Length: 388
Image 1: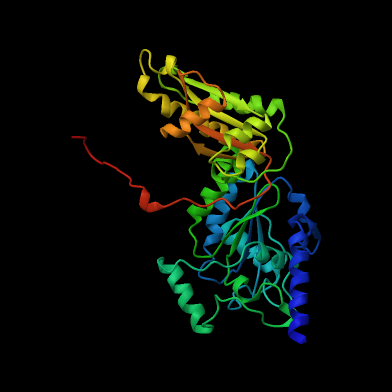
Image 2 (image 1 turned 90 degrees about the vertical axis):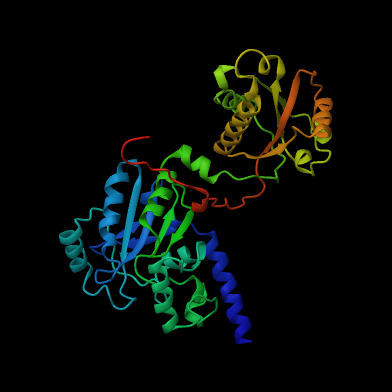
């Protein structure tokens, strides 16, 4: 019975927390005054639990460098000293602030000391941990391996899920903050985007911050394929914006060998959907991106119509994401059966060849974008001295 009650309490707590926004929380500043996090709406936030006597304490210098570099663009770093890890944040908040000012000249706001784990953890951290749990240290990194080894000596199951007691029923071991200088990145609209362990490189965090501060980079990095849609129509103004974005793409020798067919008719969308699942039957719009062979095969640059139309397709996908729409690229060319079927469905002349169909609608799903960064797919050719 007690286990069932605990499970029910956990479910209620999780549902309550998931309904909250970061802007619902209040924290105390370094003089004990309440501060509403709604004051930071529209800012990109990096929230960090810190300590002044930790091996990671020099990260204060790196954090201040980030703050000075990006503050004017909308970054705020919120510092919450915490004495729970090796008692490495002793003293009052005033003493901690004096230390950080004298040694690192920090300008970002410091808040009152809090607990981030356990029965007395601050509700803000209860919520943060439900948004992004612990995903492990990179044991291929020397510092990550060191932290994993140290914590595993203390608790062999430190990285496992589980419930400890009624007072700390949400999150379990797995989501807990593991050490000083754990960080959470929060978007301008209050979503927790990433959690970083203290061993994660500041350079990687900076790359993510740059992306969030720059709307173009944010669209590029957060766009993902959407395949389920509501029945809400797309306005003519948005359709024109998408087409204008496509026509703004780079093109070899300014040939612009593209032709676009915007399809909103439900019967026609159903006809296009044959062999493509149910996406086109659900969506509000399909844009058929085509190559105009009269343009493509005349004069200079005739070999590049596929590249030009692909660039236009990517522009449309990014524009759809920026407008809050969902989209997915479905291939047509060079598969003869698909080229024939699409050409017939939208009545294309022989000189217009369909490259792909972009399926677009108001999203009815919100998949998490995949991080496709793979360092092994990159090589840097850096040549020094005199070129030979």
